Structure formats: C-alpha cells, structure tokens
Length: 402
Image 1 (cartoon, one colour):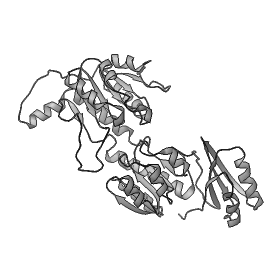
Image 2 (spheres, one colour):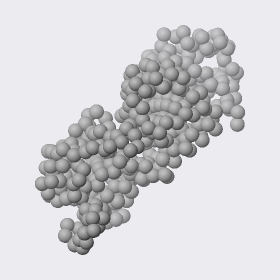
Image 3 (cartoon, helix red, strand yellow):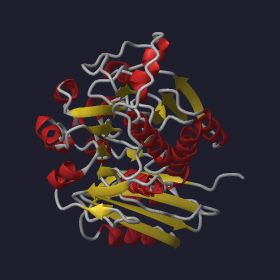
Image 4 (cartoon, helix red, strand yellow):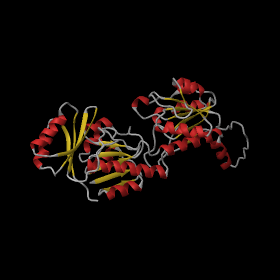
C-alpha cells in the first residue's frame, strides 16, 4: 500500500511505515485542495500536519484512502464528520509534543518579563541599553492558564516550580494540579493574571474567542501568550493594546493565516512591535517531539491498516484489539442501529465460521466491530456480511510475518 507524507514529517515515521511493508512518498510542503485531489488516487494512508486541509471534495477523490494521520495535536484541518461518513479513520498525537510546547511558553514568560526581545534587537543595532526599567522576575507573579488540558496542566506544574502562582479557567471540569486555583469565570482570571496563556482547541466555536473585550479586561501592563490556535485571537485588537501600552508584551506561535511552506513570506499586523515574540508555529517543533509524534502516529496508521485497530481515532469508534497472531480478522464499520452485532454473528454462524474474539465500540451514528475467527474467511462468508444494508465497509486482515 502507498503512503503519502506531507510537511516534513520526521524520518522515524518513514522508517516505521517501510518496516511494515508500505511504499512511502514524501513531500516537504503542504498541498492545496486541487493538488490533493490529483495526488490521492492510489494512496492508502495520508500523513499531514497543520497546513494541509482535508475537505469533503478531497475525500471524494480519495477512493483508496483508508486513514489520515495528523502528525500534530490538532485535527481541525480535517473535516472529521466527512471522513467518518466515508469510513476514513483519523489519528493524531494528543500528548507527544506537550512538553515542547510547555517549555516554549515558559521561555516566553521569562523573556517577556525581562523584555529580552527588544533588548537583543537593540544590541544587534549596536545600542547598549543597560536598564532595569520594565524588567521583572517571574517569581511571585500570577500565571492565568485558559484551557487546562494536557498542555495547560503540565504548564501549571512547571510554572509552579519557577515560583509562579497559577490560576486557571476551563469550561470542562478539570482537577487542579499542585496549588493551582480554579477561577469561576474567564473575566475573574483576566482581572488577576499578570500573564495570560491560551491553550484552547480549534473547534469552530472558539473562532474569535479572545478579542478587544478580553484584552480590555486584562490587568494593565500584563502579558499575553497564544500557543494554541491562530483563529482564536483577534490580532488587530492585540496590536492596539500593545501600542496603547495597556499590555506590556505578547508572544504568539500561531496565526489566523500561516504560510504554506518553508521560506514563504509571513505577514502579520504584529510585526515590528516592541516586546512581541513571533515564532513560526514551532511550539511542538523540537527533535524530541517530532520523533515521538512520527513514531506514535505512524504506529496508529500501521495498526489500523494491518489489524483494523482504531484506538485513539478521533472520528471513528475506538476499538483496541490485541495483535492478530493466527486466524483471520474482520473489521466491520456499520451504521449504529440495534441488532447489527447479532446479525454479524448470525451470518458468520450460517457459514460455519468459529469466532475466537470480538471487540465492539460505537460513536454517534457509527459502530465498529472487530471479529477474530479461527480460519481464513471464505468469499461466501465475506459476501454474507458485505450485503447487509448497514455496512459501510468490511475489511479482512491476516497475521503479519514477524
């Protein structure tokens, strides 16, 4: 089977997929919708990062596509319902680059507090500006974390080790780590925090989440960090609050519109501002994180293609099945209606098939059952299942040679 990997995915993913018998093709940059439509026929597995968008039109052109691997945390670049409706599994790496993002944010908190961006720029310009004006320690200051998930909680733990007081706000019910305090509202957090760091996801409802009103509610001379999604922040409003002096500094790693490939021009209203750190979406771009992401997502793709395993899929029912050692396996994606499992077993029994293991999960309108059988399936047994009106797809798997 053919694999297409875009956007400079780590070589460890290539090695792992080739070891599993896949033919891997690489492309350094992202692809446009038209380019994907032309490239995907014949491709079984697609690997992308954040700059490649998967639309229904792309999926309609990808008749051979089994799964998409997002070699990053986010999956908002993929139309997940459209992929699920076509039976295309989507996987991501929700934990692999957590530490890298946290370390970037910690570095930015210190750099902004000491006003290092403007000081290093003046040194490059030949200006010796040895002054403590506007420069502060982070110890004893208050960090407000908006979004207390995997990254937010680890940031909380590391920040406390530096002597920061931590407060957080999340719409979900999250357990406070260490001495962190939950705030009952976003406004309450903004009124108290010396540094506000966003760690929310890219769901459509978060577009424009943080704008002029929220910046106005922040403490005078506080600092703002966004290492989550570019579309959640109004950069024009942020610029105004930096120029007015209301905010003492900001750091952004993500932007509403980002260049598609290495070397393209980056444009932003935030360019050229004092004490503003702009980085090219590198929160998770460490060698350690990219290697871990490459290994993790490639493993999920191979496990799905060879054994039908969907654990940690973000759009299909998640079935964790043990490795297939002998016999055969059927992966059966179906419409989630009552009686399908009984129908599967009845049809297999009619063909004299002995079931040795079975694993089922449902998710919304879809159900997925993995069935292990003692002997290879006959064409009649497969056809008996494939003709069900509830069938979305049916795939047979056999044990792989070690």
